[in-house]
Length: 210
View 1 (cartoon, rainbow, N blue to C red):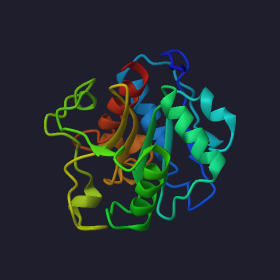
View 2 (view 1 turned 90 degrees about the vertical axis):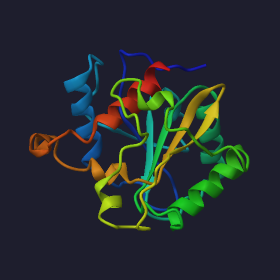
View 3 (view 1 turned 45 degrees about the vertical axis):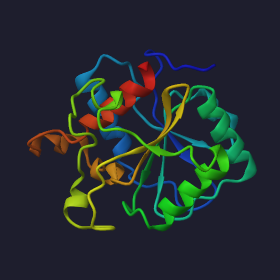
């Protein structure tokens, strides 16, 4: 089983054949900067883009998948995604539409049903380990400004979903649009009352250590 170590972290963005995969282009460098600021994890400074159909995915300690449009994996993409997760990998999936009835949400959840079974993707409780493994989020997933501003489905999603393998999250799924929330130059964090990428640090810490 592949388990990433604290000495080789790099951020992998998954490129898939359907829809659009290259959203939130400043987010990875922003999150990587936060890991430098708050942790001692050695990092590679630039994200890697890996095609889901490529075996390179199995070298990645952490993967990110996002988009606004259709998600429909090819058979090879589906096989790689499933094997990566079952072998101990971690994928953070974020819906840039932040809309539970949008095309990305509906098609991604359908794809997870085909890949892992209809009941595999489930809400996780707001006292889950991912909310306290580094920073503390006692109320569960932090709200994004896109939800509060009424963009998308005009709802504040008070939960995240996940596919769990042997008691550990393998796929973390968000309709909260954290990718867009963190899509800014990391040097602008000094203007925020509180760094809104802190939950991203929790996600990475969970992926690497739990």
